Image 1 (cartoon, rainbow, N blue to C red):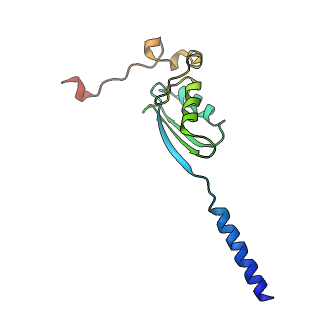
Image 2 (image 1 turned 135 degrees about the vertical axis):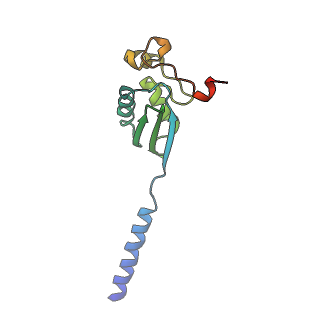
Image 3 (image 1 turned 90 degrees about the vertical axis):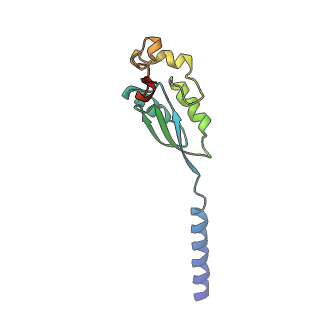
Length: 130
């Protein structure tokens, strides 16, 4: 009778270990979002990306013009995430914003050259005097 309990215990331990070994691969990616430069942009991107299956965390740093996304690789990939950001109206690395979504952005979130509120980035002081 004791042998049966030992065998059952080992089987349960084996199943528990096998279950934990199947954790999903998670990736943290940083995507350049150069025209997401205010709190409204941050909210729009974060709200839109939260809908995607596999996206675990989103943090838009509008001061740096970048978005950090933590996602599960077997549910989504970096290209789908960049496309989602572009569909929100913002450039994402090498994926330009879709024209239709960009046109729907509030004027304050559009690029300066399009009459928007985001000024052109200033050159660092080292480049000004040379």
